[in-house]
Length: 112
Image (cartoon, rainbow, N blue to C red; front, side):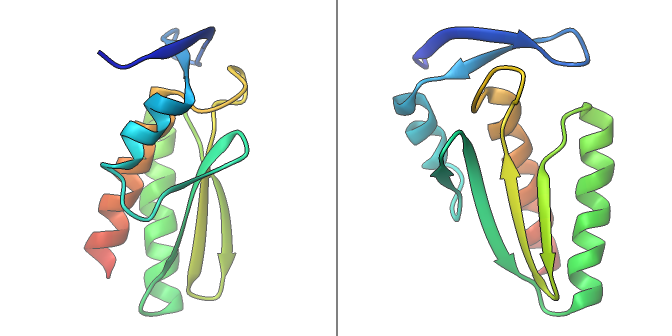
């Protein structure tokens, strides 16, 4: 069982987003290569082969985020993308973020 803190919030789909404690975040990151904790978020930077490839990844991540109604912060610097996942309404990282991070990683891998 994954340990969690007691803080929770509802996301836009009515699901409860429970704030993960540091041990649970660390456990999740073992399954998310390239992701690291940065303050109240998990972050990954990836360099894609080209600017169009980077924008295509952003496009696919945008579609996934819209479908989930849970959106990462995205920084685009030519072909380098930085994704930051945090559930603002819960005040930190929840399973919504770790699940979204896994989906983002799959898109990065597919494009690399």
